[in-house]
Image (cartoon, rainbow, N blue to C red; front, side, top):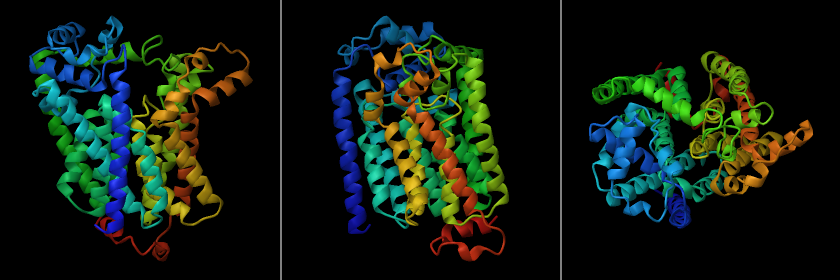
Length: 448
């Protein structure tokens, strides 16, 4: 690496270190909470003991039998322990969690945190390395913001940190035509744990054709093999695991539950449902409307991807649409929003043009990153604001902007990048419009 790249990497490591420090400080003083990593760890330990990880009874039995010295400082109540016993990860995720569950907690937890921190830092650095051909400063500052506001992921160990990082690393490998095996394995593991985070990204690679499609199909084959193995493993202890998993998901996502879009944790969601639920708290209504809003964006994106030809800049614009759109229609938290790192090359390319479009790109992308970061989310999570009883439409709109702005900004960002993506589409014979540094991507497309 050059001296500049080395300095950038060190700054990213410093940002991650600062986030880890204040994240651990917050975690040490937390009360009535259980780490996200502990929840997935309990499920893997339950399965390794031949228990039904989707059964709350079996999960509570494992929880009570574990050495809880590491939890005494948290003093979890019965409500927190009840949530920890509800497992909602697919069976394929246990193939990733189980190796860590074989280790003692005092080793497994630091190892998982170190892996999450290093993978996310590496992912941000790789995307900066790609985006610097357009502008090196903007993706650097955005990357520092993302990493410095990842303390909750680092300390709590939410799987989204590793899942999103693996997805980003896979995309970089595919676009750079390097480490093909790494690209396939990283994407497969990402989809195995949280398919709703990287699913649209995988679909984009499939639609692009050429070597992109080849890697996507290889990933699909590996995911299929992992799915068969995991399903057989879980089926041995839980023949009705599909029904139990659906029941667990419904338990924590219905009205009045912990993840109720109209409940007390709406500021901790970035999808559209919390914003719509403010006006009509009906699951059928806010789910249907969310899908209805996202469907036209998805259809237009599909048409542009299948019928258009894009230079490297255009391909990154299409990927930016994927990254933002993947957060809107279904349940996502700020942890999952780290996928917005994939918008940095597109934002840098537009910023390099200067003018109104450049300023729109930087404003929307920066707002999306900031409003899904740890510190702003903590500031928006004001219980007094979340429980205000409002009737007038104007008051509801004001409360929407104050307490749930992330989903609105993400929606605006998706429309903007879709518009930019449509402008980048070129017909046959327009190859002269492609930038000079597109050899890798163009060769991959031509191979198809």
